[in-house]
Image 1 (spheres, protein in one colour):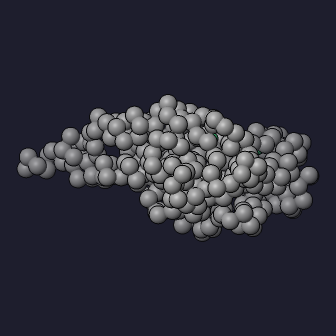
Image 2 (spheres, rainbow, N blue to C red):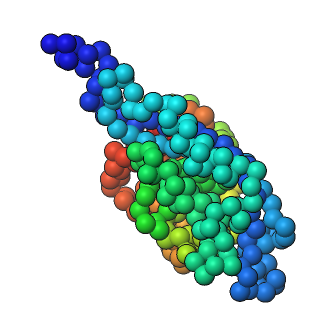
Image 3 (cartoon, helix red, strand yellow):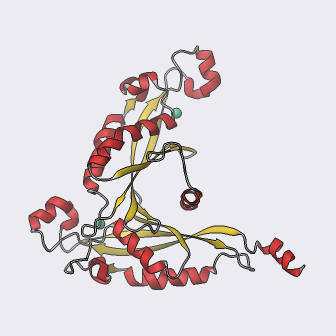
Length: 307
Ligand SMILES: [Zn+2]
Ligand SMILES: [Zn+2]
């Protein structure tokens, strides 16, 4: 009887996900010793300029488990202690190339401390101590990597933005009907948004370069095919696809996904997801690899816990 009452009170035995954020500042240098200065510069751009440069990293640790008799998955002070001793105390204000042997480039198996390589090694360090379900590491508010413990597979996301106008209406319907369906969005002269686009690619981390794919090639693709094409346009009139297709956030996300899938494959990665945020209040998400929206519970938990 006592046991039952305590379960009802404290949720003992029920599953829950929790997240914890931690920050550290560190520097790194992308310079492989087997390559010349020019070759390093050609491959890694400004990231290869000695003695290196730094970032303010933000780490989001997602964990899950059953609640204990005190209503907690884990005691938060144990979580903080593990993250501090295994990660932030070791990395904060350090030069990543020197701090962990995995990033020692003079060794054959050493790899560049890219965001995706770093998040994988952080997983390796934290997983013996915490029931991890996902890690997200922001190198910058516009660039982050996700890792879920699957060998060399990781996710890399870049965020960009464009401003565009649109009007939501179907040409085959009378204006009155369009206004009933789309409300103010059907007004005849259109309106605009500052769109945020998150492009997430999935791929295998290269054991030497630490990269899923060439980041600057990815940024160039997104810039050419999305930002340059869409920025400061009236979508319905300037983008042929939207002369027939209503440019809802959902349709714009789908179209961006269709535009980017093949080019991203050509640089060695897979487009995983497009998230298009139209306003602070609404966003659309398209999973390019699982178009039927076969989103696992784990992924929903991870996404909702970090946003
Ligand atoms: Zn960097
Ligand atoms: Zn709108």
